Length: 337
Image (cartoon, rainbow, N blue to C red; front, side, top):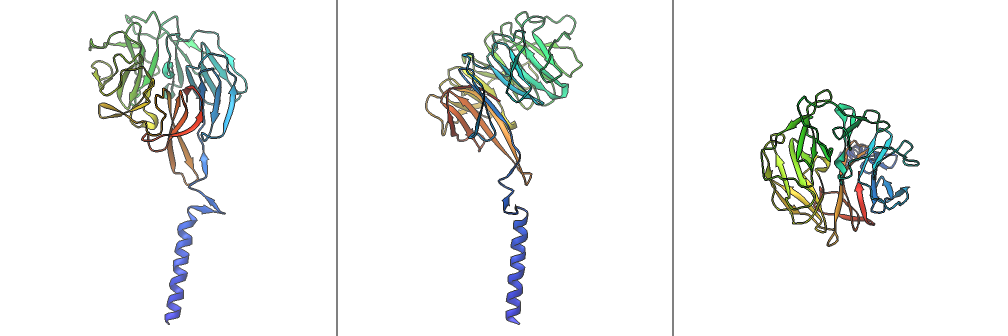
């Protein structure tokens, strides 16, 4: 009886063990490690070369150097868009690029001169002429000037330099040379001007970004730091903790905390209303010019988030929300998406 009981217990234990493993492995494949839906990361160096990767290690070379740094990168549908002086479009995964002959706003140095607003089914772009806004409804193949402005609203003469969309769907556009902020509530609404009450925010190369429903203005020059508004652009409060250097990029990757890339001072992460440096793994005096969040979906439907930095020292990755960084590729990189 004891032998039977022991053998029965061993069989039960073996079945439980096999059952617990069957969710993870099939035919020797570890579903925790096999990616079902990979991301695609695009990045460019300061000489204008363009690359992409699915893991940060295997690199595909897409576009040769032409001496002109890329200001913004984006994918829409099966198309790849990148902006140098003008906008370039590839409809064949980067094999060929077709330049569009209209002027992107030359004073916009950042990724968010271009924004994908999915609920509008539009890409918006800061341009010159008209009100300084163009949009595309066909993934960047053709562009039209946006003419829907509220009656009596002054359109910016120098055009729009950045966009951002809050989680509530409100879309914002900003002209930093004229210090004018605009809001569009939905795809059919007119652009309306927002009155900025805080007189401490003066004309400077600010660009827009956001965290959830908090609107953020970041001064590219670094002189005035970064400010946030919780009432859609009327009242503003200044963040603390940022260094006195150029603030080259800012975003909240993977819907996490806001991050700011600096000139020669690495990366800063927002904690409350104060920024703190988070440079574990980065080389000293690193300039961070681009930040991109990516998600891998595995066979077991578990998603894992990564953050990439394009920097003056190379390509870096974080798998812990930006607390530490791993060096991937050497280079002098600029835009990333």
